[in-house]
Amino acid sequence: MFILYNGNMHPRHIQPLIIEALNDTPVVLLNGARQTGKSTLAKSLSVAHGRRYLTLDDLATLAAARGDPAGFIAGLDGPIALDEVQRAPELFLAIKASVDRNREPGRFLLTGSANVLLLPGIADSLAGRMEVLSLWPLSSAEAVDSSDFNRADWLFDGPIKALAIPPCERGDLTTALLSGGFPEAVSRKSPRRRAAWFDSYLQAILQRDVRELANLEQLTEMPSLVQLLATRSASLLNFAELSRSSRLPQTTLKRYFSLLKMLFLVYQLPSWERNPGKRLVKAPKVFLPDCGLLAYLMSLSEERLTAGPGLPSGLVETYVLSELLKHLAFSEKGLTLWHYRTLSNIEVDFVLENRLGNLTGIEVKASGSVDSKDFKGLRHLKETEPQAFQRGIVLYSGREVVPFGADLFAVPLSMWWSVQEQ
Image (cartoon, rainbow, N blue to C red):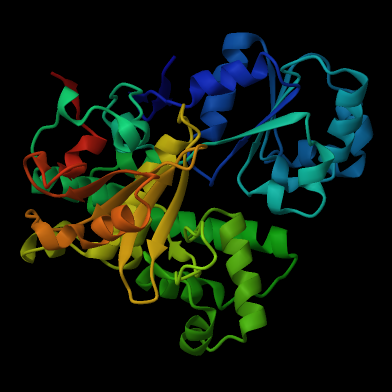
């Protein structure tokens, strides 16, 4: 099945997982930022499988759900899709009571544009009754209607020589960086119209969703904070420095940051640490997880990106982070994602780890060439974790897959949107 956006049909690689979950789980929650395609996907699945669709963006439906949650749920017959369920979190206890009386699989398909698992009491109320799946914006593979080949799983331990990866053309990479993954932004080819969409998107979230979650009328500092965080994307999270730069008390800053995190506008990447005795940095890295939105906030244009000899490293690293998250959402290997940094500033941008504790390190280089020095962090990880280390990969904007020793490879960034079996 394919989903329609402004005349362009894009496959959503997570869709088979949603259908599988609905076949054996009473409640399935599709979580993700606004405008990632959750409503479109929920409507499509509802039409295909005879499911009634309701959205809490409809004021009458929202009033009924908030006014009498138990009565609202009791009055629903058959399988239901409830869109934007974060607007009435009191529904979760009513859904729990209903599911406890009837645990038939697939009764509720929920979507949420805020991470409802971070809301107090929600995570516990449906434990064992609900499966949570993440829908991120379009991956580069989805945007070009490529197959559901999981590139994160392949990076982890797939056969490097079994795939033919075409050269990473500068124009293709620039387009991916500026467009990001929100379907509406991807569909807009005019930079001016895409910028207008990003502006409206931010205003809608900061003026409505943040106020609803925080129950506050005045959040005038929030746009400036988002702008500040854009300049810190792909860097270590330092609340003390952010507090000084934003002139916000740390208590206020952390509260605002939690709201942005709940709305998927920021993402914290935890540090990898297996041995407490090792001298590793424990601070997470912070990202604005859509590179198109990040490029908009940084006032980056095609002209600016093509004028210089290289690309902004933070923007390219953010792009890789977003692609990894999108593919991890339907990974068959159950991979987790970390960053690695020692106190002496030896770092690996990303570390993929499976359930057995095996590791693959990934470095990101914005340049079109790679040399041995670019593998310094990966070699360090290999030397300090020889039993767990599988391989290290440097993703770069070059033209060839190049081996740099045993289990070390340079791979073009074009692997995210174009791979072919040899």
